[in-house]
Image (cartoon, rainbow, N blue to C red; front, side, top):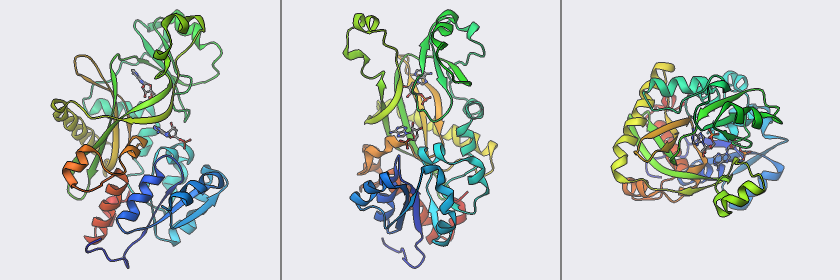
Length: 340
Ligand code: AMP
Ligand code: AMP
């Protein structure tokens, strides 16, 4: 806590789900007071782990902005994560006087798959092909539904006939038909400092999704006999380090996304973000999604990842890195530069 005066300390706050334990733990380690806005059923977790100096109970996560005045009065800086994106609406966030770490404008690009694609394409990244109509399907595709369902109910098809057969029984209105990339999923966790203009690789993960990650435990014949369909519902995350010769490309992709974001919104993207990729046998990265905030895969690294260990030589989670950036911004009188 060197050089950090608690008289200027503000409160770091977040919604009680997703990566709140990590965010609050990181904030405490950097000397901040912490606050969590949680439902009664979730609050016990934050009490148990002792990471929140105060807890505000709400009926549901969607009621987050009902306690906005209290957060403003406490000088709280909100840290967004996927549950925040899933449960609060953009208009409330846009119009709120709340202090927000990151660029709240760029979050709109994360919510909208076509804006997201524009951003990634503008960065020159390799993207899976999108099929505008099912009739054009000429290769394996993954059919994704919109909303916060998190991969639940996605299905695979390889022809228009199979698509029409499988889509029966789904009532979802909007969906994306995306080329299915055969390769290994790699989620890259970055942090871009608006203060030093430096891009860091924090860590990597792969997701543990049900039932696609367990389907290989039963024989192909049984998969067919019981008419098993794949689903990609996220259940947890497992750690990963990357073949070292791929790291230059990882940095290149991160820099390209930062440059492209500046063309979309003046403040661009800063703080944590994640590229969700599939790496092919030719070692090419296909990017199928971007998260413009902390991702839950970073929860693996409360004590730091191999990469942050080398760089910092002390436990440095992404949650803590966020708090460190805010602390440095306060010390340098540049808080405005980390809020958006
Ligand atoms: P929850 O608060 O658990 O209902 O999750 C809200 C959103 O965050 C959903 O869209 C989930 O897909 C996403 N999410 C939650 N946990 C994880 C995780 N461990 N990895 C990736 N996404 C997650
Ligand atoms: P998403 O909801 O876009 O994060 O996708 C959920 C999961 O589906 C991912 O974690 C991947 O396992 C898988 N996935 C998504 N898009 C693709 C793709 N284009 N090719 C292969 N797998 C994919």
